[in-house]
Image 1 (cartoon, rainbow, N blue to C red):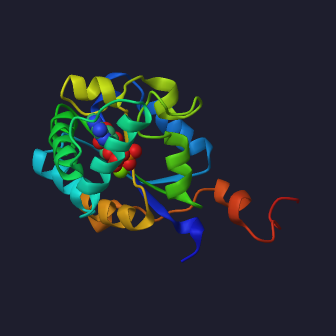
Image 2 (cartoon, helix red, strand yellow; image 1 turned 180 degrees about the horizontal axis):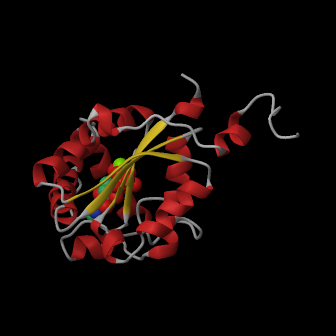
Image 3 (spheres, rainbow, N blue to C red; image 1 turned 90 degrees about the vertical axis):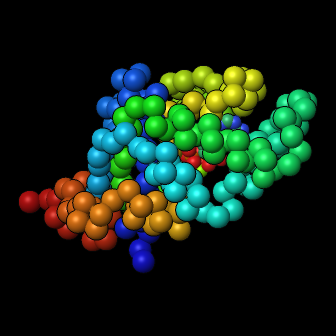
Length: 200
Ligand code: ATP
Ligand code: MG
C-alpha cells in the first residue's frame, strides 16, 4: 500500500478536552496536510481503555521497561525492577485517567501518518518532550511526580506507535462505516504526480 494512504489513531485524552485544546491539536494535524477520516466524542469504559492498551500483547512489559529505564537515566531508583509489575500498575492508572471524562477519538490518514503524528505529539513524558511538540508545548508532567501520586502521566494525547498498532486500534474504536473515504482538494498539491491542473 502507498504510504499516502497510511492511517493512524489519535485519542485526545480527558486533560486535552478540559484544557480546551481540541481545536488547537486538530489544527496542527490539518496544517501538516493530514486528513481526518473518523471522529467521535466518548467516555471510555475501563474495559475499552484496557483493550486499547493491550491490543499489543507486549505493551505491559515494554511500558514497564521504558519506565524503569527513565528512572535510571535520571539517576532515580525505580519503584520496582520488575517490568511486568511496573507495566501493570501503569495500566491500572491509565484506566482511571482515560475513564474520568470525555475523550475525542480520531482516525487520520496521509503520507507517513503514524510517524508524522508521533513527531507532532512528542515523546511520552512531557518533562522531556521537545519544545514545539503538543506534549512539550501545552502541558507539564513527569514519571516521577505521576508515580509519587500513584497516577498516569497526563500527556494530553495518545497516538498509535506503528501501522500495525494503528490498524488494530482503529478497528477497536470505529465501525467500518464510521471511517470515511473522501478527497481533499489539498491532496492534489501534496500527492499529484504531474501537477497539470493548476495553470489555466
Ligand atoms: P500513548 O500510547 O498514550 O500515545 P506513548 O506511546 O508515548 O503514549 P506508552 O509507553 O504507550 O506511551 O504509555 C501509554 C501511556 O501510559 C502514556 O501516554 C502515559 O499516559 C502513561 N504512562 C506510561 N508510562 C508511565 C509511567 N511510568 N507512569 C505513569 N504513566 C505512564
Ligand atoms: Mg503507546
